[in-house]
Length: 382
Image (cartoon, rainbow, N blue to C red; front, side, top):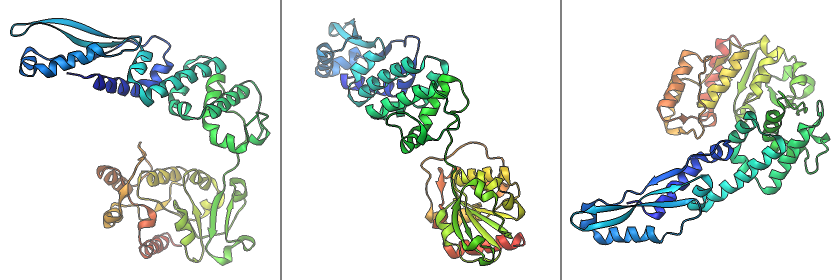
């Protein structure tokens, strides 16, 4: 027997799962039906009090518009004819939300109102619908003021040419460089979906890449530790014999003086910059990242630019030797990584089999790491 509370919980769960799909659907969403599982004759005979209480609860339930209970009469030999509720019908998502109540219902009302406003401002299309679905949680959770700014900025950018402009130059009230940086992803997605363009044309700040020159004889202009843009790094020519690329900045900063060596912070986007630098291609490259899904994904991307990159401490032996230092990977990256070696692939597969474990770079003892780096450098002749 499904109680009123249990039925509300089921309605809330269905609404939460289907919220963005329902909110963006052009065609009417079919009614939702919840089977109430009334008692059988045997159950009603064994515990008549519970069965009667359940029937009275549904009979007294205050149901919002669009929600109704279907009743049937059962002819039971031992206790006679009994009228029982058999199913709950909720005619549309708004009825589901009204019946469910609570926070999910509030989020539904917010999202449907904002979907309507986005379509009024930017138009209706399959692309707009897909974008709203991808960003449904953000559109629901931002404050009313932030949503108004996002919508106003998207509408303005849709109808104005901003090719070559920087965020600081946008004449949109309330939109500055910091705001645009925080909201660029959603604004860009909405504008591109509405206008069919491939890019906004707004000039983004060139990200900086951290570099440490470990050999004093290679230091350009006396500066051994610096961050520079892609274009500035292109003109660098340290003449190194080996380039270390580390995912973790602390490992970069901990490196000791090293004849003929340069170390670069290669986290995330930076590997694409590093892979394009002419001077990096002049000497062997050794990569060391976290033993986790992201570390192997970064190595895969770096090898797409520099196929001969050697990895260090990214094998199953290193992983198993430090099992007591494992933690859980909260957001494991998935997908095929075809640029890994057999040993690296084996280590990655082991991480997956162990429930997406991860061994962070900083957890490996520094003496162990330095010894492995020296062996790797010696193996490539550096």
